[in-house]
Picture 1 (cartoon, rainbow, N blue to C red):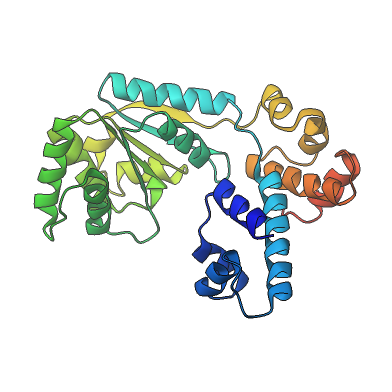
Picture 2 (tube, rainbow, N blue to C red):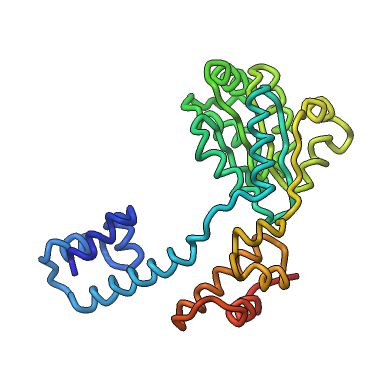
Length: 283
């Protein structure tokens, strides 16, 4: 059992401390167990470890929904590539749950030079600038003006793209700071968010029109096409599409249906889809 546990940790990139926290035991207990010197309830600990490994395997199987080159993903990536080629500013937006964040993270996987910032509600200008500084590996200062200059100078030195996800959460001052960074450095910049981002980019009183006028590329997520559904959900595509065309909800239904099928050792079918849909908010 010790060998099986070591192989499991190595295969999944987990540490002994992560396993210990998940089981509610001390790291030393796991260490001693793996060395076969644990003096506690070995049988009880092995039951916990075995249950954890089985649950982890099941969870991993359900999570393993392939990334599909949807029409939205391809067009968003095209806009981002154009942004880089022309040192432009661009926006990518769509309704919540349409796949924007997944699309951006897939883009970043093949663009290690990208600086990705994920904004949160209430995030102030200093926090955003500090996050950019941290990703760039430069010392963060308390003065926003100095940080803007330092960030701009660093971007001048490298080939990069600045991407800010959930950008509808940025304050007016922060959006203005992003514009100034682009003006000073000409770094390709992409803002990603919900439709509220478009309104925010103009400012309530038109105070950000200088920023809005600099946007050269735009892609609004259109939703899944019939081909997207087939590529994502295979033979279950029609059953899921009859329930919802919303990407996040469709994926949630599919994952739950897969789990239902696994529990019964069956191939996923319309019954599993229907059962799963009853456990997802569709409105």
